[in-house]
View 1 (cartoon, rainbow, N blue to C red):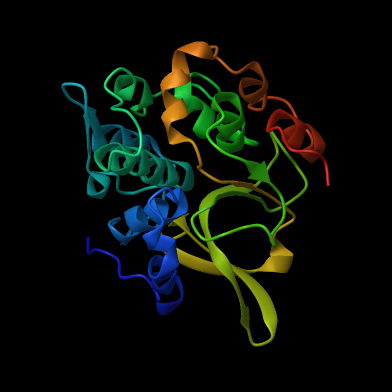
View 2 (cartoon, helix red, strand yellow):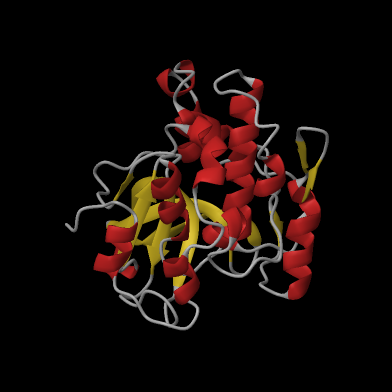
Length: 254
């Protein structure tokens, strides 16, 4: 597996004023993407889940993150690794207190949807944005005009939310035009190749929720939230709506 070199479009986002602002956690998110592998295949099999679990190992008050072990990969796992690596980078840069007491709670496990931190991130519906809202990690919103490279983004390919949804969890890289057609560019684990960038016509995205990491230190408040999020857990077997997903994410309906 080789390591990825970002396109001119997204690499440019890592330069200049964006990186100059130490508290700009979008910049740190983009930095972590640069260190992620490329390719490796896409799958949601037990093998892929086991590979993700093996890629994050807790140590003495810390954690070892080896994304190359998480192969094949899938979208929620890929973005979760970037999220963890961003927390780790923030800790190392002194942008938040050490996370010694919570790293064990952050490691991915074979948890049902809605259970624990990984179970929230991996859930159907607004998993990541619900977590951001519960722990006040940053703002959630729906406006493309407000979006910036480095925002996490839950894509809904249809209006369905929950049991019958078709979704994709990515890191937003920006908008562009291809042959006069508006496109959305993002990074994730994408079918069929795995880790990497992709650009899709904006018209193919039915709905989207953006989540911007702004106060990562609040991840230490994990003990303050229930072990199980009943709403996210219910989406395995029940349908929700986009309006309810926004409400659960602390976003006013557009």
